[in-house]
Structure formats: structure tokens, C-alpha cells
Image 1 (cartoon, rainbow, N blue to C red):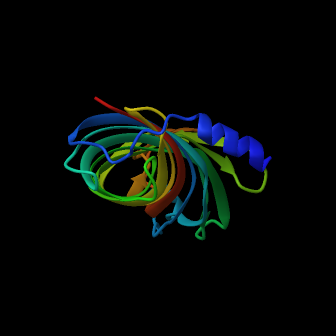
Image 2: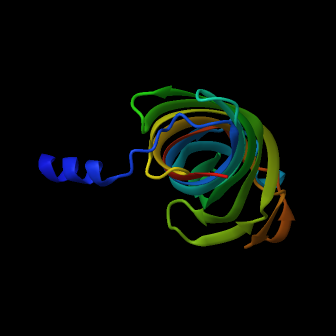
Length: 233
């Protein structure tokens, strides 16, 4: 096995990673996990006394990221990135006035634009360790949210989708290896603060279409593993 890996490595072009100044672009495939909480204590129709949200669970996420940037020297670069990441979200709401509870299931998706700065530490002529940090804005959408009766699972309503805008920040680190004079493959990990999500203010179902207080998911964090390809122009 070690011999095979050595032969594969020797077969790759020995192109220096220490690149000249210039523009570059790339694509990343993201897979990760997310976490969040909720401070909502008055969700749902005011007539039922306000729902207290608990048991928030965010499922595994998938996403894509594209980036364009400029390398200043062999160590420093800056880039702008756009990423779309989505995953399932579930929570419950207890309505103590009536002693009932509902379960909710939907999709939490983020479209984020970030400005980033990166630093490369060269390990060899073809391999570098990269660290980057970015700040930007995230458009967070809760959609396809279905409310069911928690004890029985019976359908109750579909909640309106809604998009909120929140500041976002991300740090990432990884390793990159040049496979040609202008193409680099990478594997990395990132941690991002995404901000909050919120449902729309109406529901349509067993009570017709009625106004509600939105349900909120607060302080969402995402951790991702990314596989990337980058091309120098």
C-alpha cells in the first residue's frame, strides 16, 4: 500500500506551490454539521397562549462554495466567496395554556457572501498548509416547515417561509497539493457562525390561514469538511 502511494506521488508533476502574484478561482464541496438553540417563548397563534420552543435539532448539511481571489505573494492572498449550505431542522413547541405540543420539521438554508484573507505555510514544493478567515453576510431561510401534533404525528399546518439577513464569520484550515502548474486540490475544515433563522408569520392548515408569531432558531454554528479544486488564471 505504501509503495503504491509512493508511486502515485512520484507520478504527479512536481510543480511548485509557491505561486506568483495573480488571480485564481475555485469550487468547494461541503459536508458538515450544525447546532443552534431558540429563545422563542411566544411562537404560533397568540390565541393558543404562545409556544415555548425546545428540542432544536439541526441535521447534517451539504453545500457548495465558489471563490475568486488574488494572490499577493507566495504566502498571502485574499478572495471573495459565495456558499450555499442547507440541512434539515426540527424542533418542538409546548403550549402550556392548553397542555398541547407541536413538532416542526423543515429546511434551514444559508446563502452567504464573505470577504476572506488567507495565509499559506509551505511544507514542500507542492504542498502547503492554509489558514483563512472571513467576514460577510448570510441570507438564512427557513422553508418547507410542517407542523404536526407531537403525540400523534397528525398534520396540522404548513408555515410560511421567511429569509433573515445576519452577519457571518468563518475560520478555516486545510492542506493543498499542486497537481499541475495551475491546478491545486485541497482538503480542509471550517467553523462558521451563521446567525439566526425565523419562520414566516402565517400558517395554513387545520385553522385555515392564520397569523402567528414567528418561531426563531438562534445562534446557529456550522462545522464543515471541504474538498476543493482551485485554478490559477
